Length: 255
Ligand code: PGA
Image 1: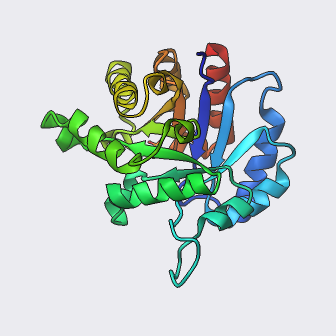
Image 2 (image 1 turned 30 degrees about the vertical axis):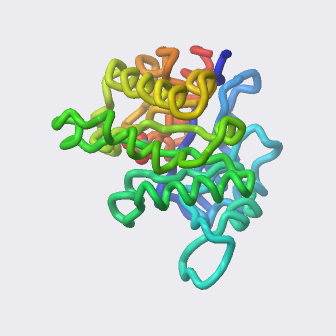
């Protein structure tokens, strides 16, 4: 099965409503009509609704960067799945390492969020990845196994069609040091093997697995040309419309 390449931007805590809509308009004018690449923008909660209103059509998928797993209630400062959905999102990033490291998310809470997202017909982009220390200690596979076990607990083959995995080594995020293509491919193959073993035979090859961590136009080709790397989850380089457009063009070339 030929998987589509995907370029997803993770804006993190950047861009006001005005800045977000300006990006959306500008970007929409630049993307290639004939590109078959999947494009996703994960904007701050405050910008989501307005960007959806600004973009014409559904060529660009919209995603949130987090959400709570409960339906509603006394959770000051939290956002429910139905709110994310009604703001115009079809995707949601879950378990980003910044959420895990700075805001106490655990494999268990990530699992609850994945289940809630699927229940609301939101497609989760599940982030996994090891720290530098864990890599040095030879624990990459143990960490990825634990994170996937937590995130995908109880998820069946049909649900898995709507799940994207993003392998994001923590040491590569925002550091300018990307994983080598060999390191990324090794991790992606481990993820595919895990899915095959723990969910279903064909799922390992059907699932979209993105790489994230300092991906930019200068290194994207060397990463994306590998069949096991389906695309990128891009932080820093997604903030600049020209760089993000270039990443889409590189992925299109390789499609
Ligand atoms: P980066 O971030 O591209 O700035 O390294 C990637 C991410 O955190 O998703």
